[in-house]
Image 1 (tube, rainbow, N blue to C red):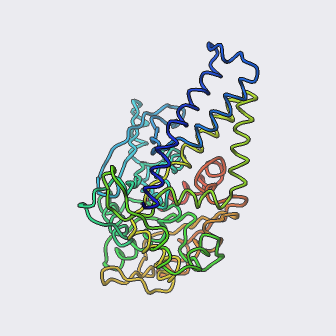
Image 2 (cartoon, rainbow, N blue to C red):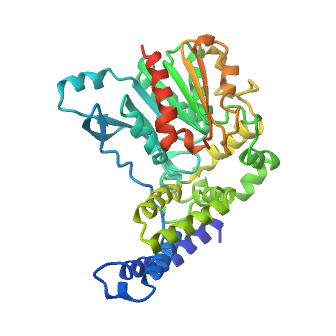
Length: 415
């Protein structure tokens, strides 16, 4: 029996326990239930909800971006699927308003493509990023598909395919009026895509905003980088690649399972997650519903993971974290050399978190050393003091400190 099958067996075994715990939590906490008056009911309810949340399945969360506030007006937003590929959907979040003056303003806003990471979590991890950008921009986003949901007859997916997807999306939206924001992992394939387009003489985006990504993973290596360099590629093939079992549509596909990636996330900071769950239990006992709800919201997103195609995962390990082909100038895709120096008309902004433990300081800024064809005046770098990896694109620090600078940079180069 494979590891994936054992995992599915464990999920099936835990399901009755988890949902029984959910029922117990409700019975001992609902105001109308006589069990809520039992001595210690608050602790029983809190303990059961904690068991439920540890044992339950976490499906892909919805985007839930239905309206935003612009100039004091509540503006409705609808989610549109623009392009559907086997491994990715290109989405647009379209804004509407009945105010004639604001309709004109919205039409004139810059167009942004947010390239979400394909590195374990769903694209909805960037919900706060997208919602904030919608205040001043027309926003498109890449919504990656869980590989276990893609039938094998639809073919495989590698790092080169990722680059091709980005090129297609840029052309479809229109590079001449586009600004591309890549968050974490996609900084590498996005830079590759734009480099190839520039090398062919194609139009390239007005600007690139690269946030917390491993352009040159040799700089300030983190534990993530060390794992990739201390093991040969064969180790990853033999130890983390699994076959999707029935009854998923992708049955038989080779993947890097999301549950293994999730375990890696937790292993990086086990004490932090333990204390977070203990605080959640304490908040429930105290009746602090606001903090408890914040915990639920965070872990609903954090615990929802997807499977990555094995080919893509292994090629990323090899190209980005072991051979460093991009910064060494040795990356070729379908016979074309990836040459960032070919980019000339695109402004470049790099953003790093001072305390980023996934992409160390200097890894993203390395893009400036590679993009020598861009005029020096069109280069800009931001180091966000006190920010970890997630703080540069989500949360209060993103909204109040990082976003205003991103907004102004995009506006400066919007033709």
